[in-house]
Image (cartoon, rainbow, N blue to C red; front, side, top):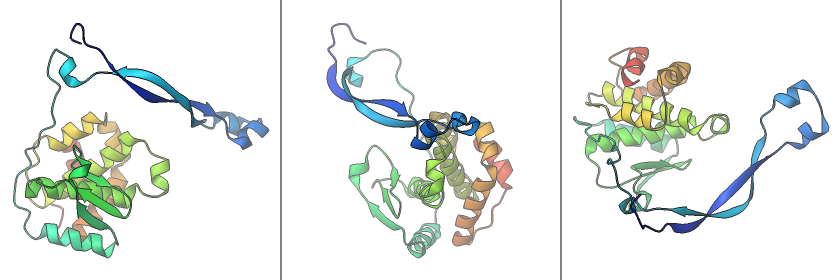
Length: 215
């Protein structure tokens, strides 16, 4: 932090935990092991600082060096989304995100290279297939982002794109790791295979080998 800089005051949520009614009424071992549910208690004033107000080493940036030819795979993926009743739109309002999955709709940031846009679209498609129903409530953001990016890596690599370290960097940003990938291997494999069948592409490498590579 630079000397003399003043923070910007904002309101931040304050959360606490409240036991479910069933847990409060029953004193069983199963209830005691149940996770409490977070609830909003109120708000408090906190101070934040703009990046320009700080000094020190530069923050790391994700590598965006995905290259290669997408060919007809983009159109086939969009056709698959249409068949799944998932709408696709482009919006600058989602920046700095490259893509967002809303559940029944995907938004992409315009201006991406064709290779990067395809990989982003596969990532958000994986979210649509995996994380918009019950599974969303039983997984963490780390799990969801790791699974979606692993699917994006496998599919993009299978169609011939050069991924560099983009996927591994992204997974590490969300604190994903090889152990988590191994635990989700089956669901990653099923989802990647579903998308590859829609693209009429055969996976060039075993999924577990691809998962080890992205880890």
